[in-house]
Amino acid sequence: MRLLRIVPDNTRFKFVWFRRFSYPLSAAYSILVIVLFLTVGLNFGIDFKGGTLIEMQAKSGAVDIAKVRQTANGLGFGESEVQEFGGGNELSMRFALQPGGESAQQAVVQKARDAFSAEYDFRRVETVGPRVSGELVQAGTLGVVLAIMGVLVYLWFRFEMPLAIGAIVGTLHDIVLTIGFFLITQLEFNLTSIAAILTIVGYSLNETVVVFDRTRELLRRYKTMPIPELLDLSVNSTLSRTAMTATTTFLSLLALVIFGGTAIEGFALVMLFGVVVCTYSAMFISTPVLLYMDVRSQGAREEAREKASGKPPAGAKPKAG
Image (tube, rainbow, N blue to C red; front, side):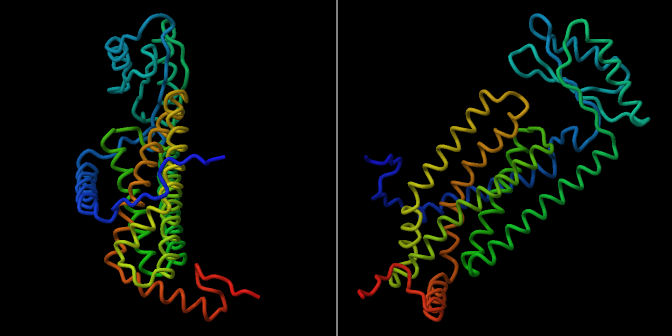
């Protein structure tokens, strides 16, 4: 039976040549991310800001956003954020952190129930105090930093310097572009977002390692092939696997976005963006970086180490006994 092939086996696409477009595009996007981070900032969710989040569903008909916002602002807890979501009969309200500790936050919930329970069903209520939100910020930031450092250390030992630098550049590139997605869309940044970023780091690492493993193998096999051609060959030879992985993951995440509900919609959207970015990065960012590295000496060192350990070079035919 013939196997499914999204990409033909004899593909000879010039990936390295497209660095003329991919590098300026990624550089412009990264600059935009820095500007937005310094001016607009992330839309931190209740996990990090503290306060009260209430999600309600209208008992009948569509919601009246203007009326709900006017009533919520009149409760005496400052200006509230009211947003519609779902099928037109659901909305969310956010109230800022109130002075007075836990009892003050519970007072917000009680007054909201008194004001809206006649017309709306309360679907979700979350209250996060200042101490908890501060601890979550510290724990989330520390978790991301340690995970990224662990990945970078792994890449450094997994490959020798030229390939390690290319893999690190690709991983950091994917993190920056993902943060940019949050900044541009103003999607709520919460603990689920931290999980999405860490998952994207893992996916980016997987895509890069697959391509670079093939690059290292081809460096030992083709000692005179020009580096641009060799890098194109390494990407093209893994392109079918990359396309299958990205397509199946993309379709699964798309199903989560459409049918998963509001609880995981944010996570699925970020992951959907991450799959596209990681695939793009492995082919058009990480691999062309090797043009500026001494990768040919990398292959020679690998071969010398294998000879010293008694292993046959990659691609070598075993001797007949």
